[in-house]
Image: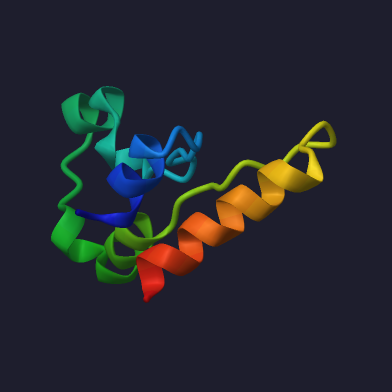
Length: 74
């Protein structure tokens, strides 16, 4: 199971926020971008997710998230 699905299955609201523009339909329909022309962008896109981060996040929630990350990486 990949990390994204693992976190979602543990009710941790991760998300992908940095989607390359050439993945959006407007750019696909109006420009001829080839994702293979952007190997670094594709690599980053496939490896980065956004973890929960906001002022109302409680200490026990932070510990829960950290523990799940540690369990995944063991």
